[in-house]
Length: 313
Image 1 (cartoon, one colour):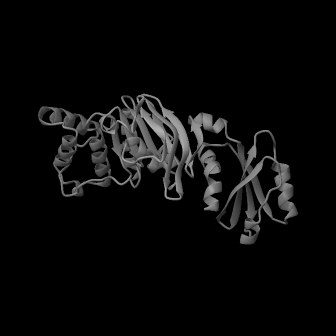
Image 2 (cartoon, rainbow, N blue to C red):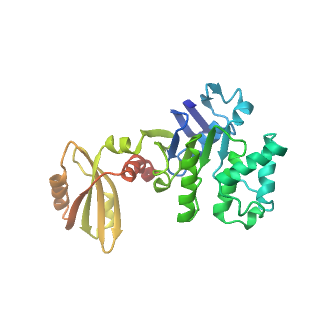
Image 3 (spheres, helix red, strand yellow):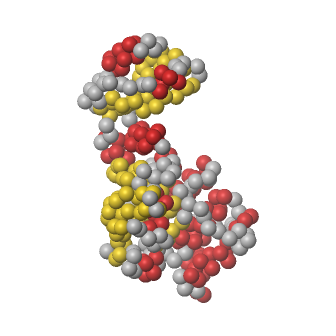
């Protein structure tokens, strides 16, 4: 089990991670979701033992990563966002090199190699130079290097970033299969790349955890539904000054498409704000083309939790 408690990481005066706490249970696939710069990679680096925290603690099976990092690293497989491959090496030689760092040699290496080649579907490229492989196979090679010592815990930082749709599906399927045997923590800034893969989601924003739960739980516990107000093209000044003085309503964003503006509002399930939003638009002499409610989904939850800080950045 991974136990993170009051974790803080500062880079000088910059607070990258702000006293976050969470657990990851054995056999769980946890999605660590947030925009670029939210603190995801920093947290994974600390859990993996490659970076020291400013304060707080990380326990792996009740053992502190700071005081027992060498022994704990043997049970962790870590794939950084920037996959550290040697392009002039063959896949076989690279995996043999990585295995050697864990003192896996001879027959033990052959057995470990056979296992990760099968897991990551590398049989067709195992004797190719890494630089000659497609991006999908490069990513598979990185995963194989993180798995070569058969760790109990797998930390994957943006594992499907930059892959084409077919490659993303293949890697997600591999992660799901690995989750049957290992504790997996996978980070992403892309909701579509993570929501179908994981058992539970943590959303981190500006170094702080803003949501934690299953996809269904996050949707049910969100502040409410979504209303889209379709308007004739509006001036930037009008959009910039939108301040909806209606209790339980929050303006999220505006989008321009096909000669119209679509304003998106979030509202509390406790109220029906359509009449008040309509009156607000009329008061400002905006021309309304349509209004419709949209069932809240996970993307709406993520956007509502992270958009305010993005707008102020």
